Length: 71
Image (cartoon, rainbow, N blue to C red; front, side):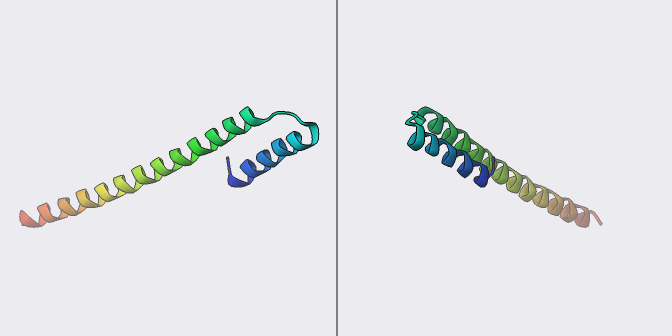
């Protein structure tokens, strides 16, 4: 869910609340929880990807240094 989609859904739910008097508290809590989880998942993926890239660079650097030692 993009930021824009989140904001549009949030606005629609608040509009329901103010115009119709409909309680939307639980829906908003679920929406916020879903959005928060997606953000946390994205952060973890980013950190994991950076860590893997760093490890791969270290491995390739070590492989090069070992091959030079044997010459």
